[in-house]
Amino acid sequence: MKNISKLFTYVLLATGLVFTSCETTELDLLDDPNSVTQDKASLDRFMTSIQLDFTSFMRQMGDNGARLTRINYMFGRTYVNNFQPVALDGEWSTAYRGMFSDMASATILANSSASNKHLGIMKILKAYTLITLVDSFGDVPYSQATQPSVYPAPVVDSGEEVYAAALDMLNEGIDLLNQPGDILEYDFFYNNDYGKWVKLANTVKMVAYLNTGNNTAFNNVVNNGNFINTSADDFQFQYGTNETNPDTRHPSYNGNYNVTGTGPYQSVWLMGTMLELDDPRLRYFFYRQTPCTPGASCNPGGSQTTLTCSVAPRPNHFPSNMLFCSLEDGYWGRDHGNAEGIPPDSFQKTSGGVYPIGGSFDDDRFTSVTVGGGAGGRGIAPIMLAAWTDLMRAEVALASGSAGAASTLLSSAINKHMTKVLSFGSLDPEANSDFFATATDVSNYVSGVINEFNNGGAEVKWEVLAEQQFIAHYGNGLDSYNFYRRTGYPKKLQLNIDPNPGAFVRSYFYPSNEANVNSNIVQKPGVDSQVFWDTNPASPGFPVAN
Image (cartoon, rainbow, N blue to C red; front, top):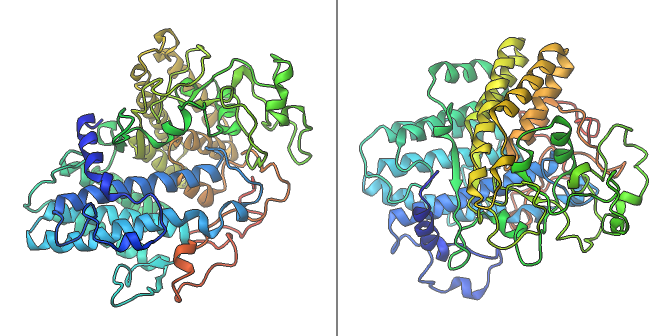
C-alpha cells in the first residue's frame, strides 16, 4: 500500500483541481489561481490531477457495473430509467474534460523536456480509459477529441478503431517507460516502479483481448509472464484517514460512516450468496449493526415496518429458492431494483466493512457506525488485482476446454483474493481478532468451491466461476459487467424485483452533457445497443437473469 503521507500531500495538491459540479458558470471563466493551465502549472501537477481523475473515473464506472451485476444494490425498477443520459455526466466529464484535456496540455510540456516516464504513464492511463469508455458506451470520440478549436463537435470513432488505437498506445507507453527520463514527483500507484507500470500495460492488453475473444493474443501475454500476477503488483489507489481539509478517506466510507448512520444499502444477492457459501470474506466486506433482520427466523417483532418487503409476498416471478428480502444473522440489505422510499433504518441496515472502504470489521459487536469508526476510511480503490488476472485466465481456459487449468487458476484466484481481503482485518483497531478467518477456514472454503467446480458439468463450472468472479470484484464491478455480457453467467443471479424491468443495459446512453451539445453525437434509442465485441443475442432475453 502507498504511503499515507504521500496521499495526504497528493490530495492537498489536487484540492484546487477538482470541480464539485459539472455546471459551467461565469465564475468558472475567471482566472482561477488554483486551476491547472499550461502556462503556469508544472508537469507534475498535471500528473497529480490526471491520477486523481483516473481513479475517480474507474471507481465510478466500477460502481455502475457493480449495481448492474448485483454486487452493489441498484435502486429503481427499470434499467432504462436507472441509467438515463444524465446519470453518467460526471464520469464522461472526468474522462474528457478533465483527464484527456490535462493530458493534451501535459504532453506538450513532457515532450519539451523529454519526460518519457510521464509520457509513458499518460499513454497507459489514457489507453485503459479509452478501452473502458468503449466497453461502457460503444463508439466514442477519439480522433477529434480534446481539440475544441479545430473540432468543437468531435465525431465518434468505432469501438474497433478506438480499441486498436488503445492497444497501440499501450505499446508506445511501454517503449517510453524503457527510455531515460525524470521520475514523477508523485506516483501514487507504483511509486515510480516502472517495471510495474509495464506489467499494468500488458494486463490492460489482456482485458482487451479477453473482451474481443482473441485468446491467442491473450495467451501470448500470459506466456511472456510480464503482467500483474502477484499482489505486490496490484493496481489500486490507497486512501487515508484525514476527515477534513482535505478529506482523504475512501468516498464510500463517507456515506457509510457518518453521524446519521449508514446511507447506502448493500446487495441482498451478494450478502446472501456469501452467507450461504460461508465465505470467510463476509465479515470483511460487510459490517452488521444489528443481529437480526426483519422477516428472518430471529423475529425482531415490530421492526418489520423498517423493512417493508419482510411483510410483503414474494414476487411471483421469483423462484422459491431465490434470495429475497430478509437474510439471516442481521444481514440487512435490499433486493435488485427495489425502488421503495427510505425508512428510518440507517442504524439498523448493514454497512460496508473494512474491505475495501476502510470501515469496521464485523466481530459480532453489533454497534452503530460512527464517524472515524473501524479503519477510519483507510481503504482502497481496487482497479486491477492479481486475483482478477487469474480469474481472466480461468475464463479463457474454461472457454478453451481446459477445465483442469481453469480449476487451478480459480483456486489461485480465490486464495490470492482471500489473502488480500483478510489482511484488512488488522486495520480496525477495535476488531476482535478471535473472529478473523483462519487458514483452515480459507482452505475449507476453497476446497468446497473447487470440488463443486470439478464435479459439475459445463453449466455448473460456468456458474461457479461467475459467482466467484463477482464476489472477488466487490469494490469495482467493471470487469464483472464485462464478464456478464461476455458469458451470460451467472444465470442464477437474483432477478429484478420488477417482472418487466426492460432490456438490460448492454451499453449506456451517451451522457447528456455531450449529446445535448455535440451535433455529431446521435443519442441511442435505448440501453440495449451492444458494444462491438458483445456478439451475444439481443436483449431482452440475454442475459437470462434480467
